[in-house]
Length: 247
View 1 (cartoon, rainbow, N blue to C red):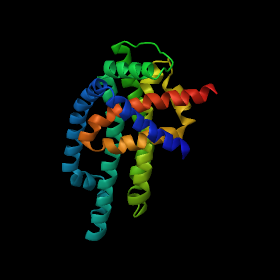
View 2: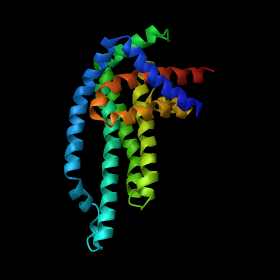
View 3: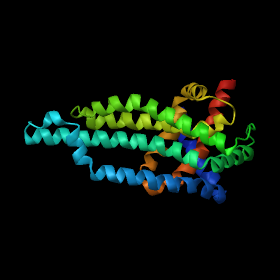
View 4: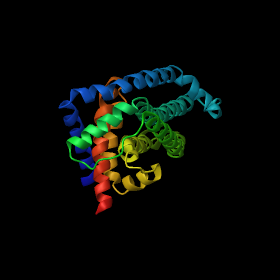
């Protein structure tokens, strides 16, 4: 619990750092504007067609009574949309960090310099883009190993509408946190596997950052401002976890 609270505090410190440097906040928000527009359009389209999709994935309920058919298809709709939100949030951070690679590289450098943190190597835009896209794709695919079973579990009455959403939120928070710390770790030559191993030792810290950030990013307009704040918090979390490794 102490690590979780510390992670939330780092998220708050990210806000404080950027409020003292509005230019960095603006730089971090610009890539998020484009990504938000793209993903929001996709989620809106999904919401419009969710009834048809729920019917498509529950053909077994065609001959059921109206009451049970409706209940199962509502659960299916919630499950499908919940999984889409998880994937959208993970994709959001990967796309935003890739599109805005030079901006986030600059933010990480300024934050580390301002706090006197250990210096790191500078990355070219193309290298940052390649690492961001490759790492983001790997995380999305890995997240599906968790979200697909949870979507299936969403069909279970009561559990699917109570326990499953909580688990989805935690899964999203974890993978979102991995995205947020990636730039700080890539700047230190750490592979995605090394990043996961390092952060897993402070999982509460990662969830403390990722949970409020991912929940706030569900709100499209809020996501534009939350992303640079969460990224700045991610730099702090990354260094805290590295200090733990050095002990």
